[in-house]
Image (cartoon, rainbow, N blue to C red; front, side, top):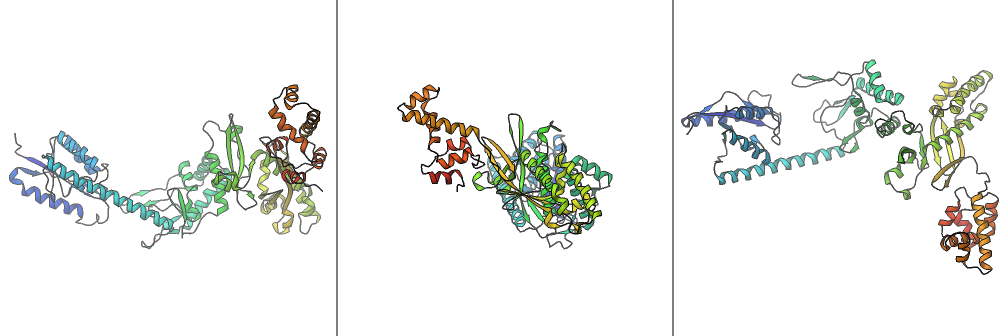
Length: 555
């Protein structure tokens, strides 16, 4: 039975907000066109409902639209018989969403009509035509989205600010045609304070509490609509987001990359790197392990450099339930290849070596550290250095590392550069009275492998006899003598409970040159030479080449 009255609802939509503030905007134009169409069908019993269903500034690529949801609720309630739109893409630009909408309309015996596109959805041909049109609408939306993404990526590579809310510390450029950020001096001080707090406490929770006590609040924003946001206490998440935003080092971020920009940096590179290293180290900590020994920090972070000038970054590996910490050259860390060069040093042993080097410097520093020594300043200096010595000799020597400005790890040398400002504060001696050359202390540095273990040795290498290697060489000569007497390798191996293969490998020790054997007996072998290294190597038969191959410096 035909309905005598068809209740019509008009739905309008516009993708962006531009022009919506005008007295007569695009939504009004769509409404007027649809209203005229409904009135033209008055003889068919069409009656326009007064409720408006408008979505201004919302994409048709999804259904999370307040106006559309209200329309669907009224359709489900049976209050609408016909939906009138200006064009089909006002209703949706997604073919999948359109299928869901049609199904929902059908359940409530509701139809729809497009004012500028005549369709009869009751026939298969009409539905086919409609589907083709919506496919093009969806294609247009996806192409537009790709174009916008490409434009954003290109803008980011040029260092342009890509819009959105300006971060704390910056404001958008007053000229809307310039896509740049300008410094907000007052907020920039707040940003510096938050970085300084984290550098001091190295704990987001502590920074949040300190910031709250100091009255630090989030950036206040007022929108064109009059709505205001911000001005509230900053959570740990908000502070973490701020501390990791590369905009504060003069860059803009796009996805995983950051590009140099034109706006001034608020944070210098040294502080930025120190904070990032600490945050990364903290983020590696597993839940429920707070305070455990395996989660101890890396106190040399930000101070270590290799011979190429690259910073050594703290990292770790888990094995057999333990965490093994290391300091690794960034180049080696990024390339994941040992062939790229760089250092991978066990953290605990390096920290111990640095502590020992610092204590060695402290023993001689009072005699050299003052540029123009006198009795009074010498006394203050000695007292201050004695306190540092106590820190370095305590159970937590890492507390003394704050007096180290920089540590350079080179081949054969560990070079410490003391922090003049920290020393001046600890000794009550002005930095101008300190001898700058005396702030640098270098020690011989040896890296030795013992199986899988790496040993760091400070100071000039001292003769050290390797009894394991000496005994192995002696036994190889005994076996060689027995073999030359006529015994077979199988008989010799059987007599000691071995197979011929490892025996043959050990007997090559008997072919070491006499000079090398004497150096080994005297303990003058290279620091990294071990029995395992010789057995795994392809030892050259020439004695001169053997010395060069194994790293001996023989007269």
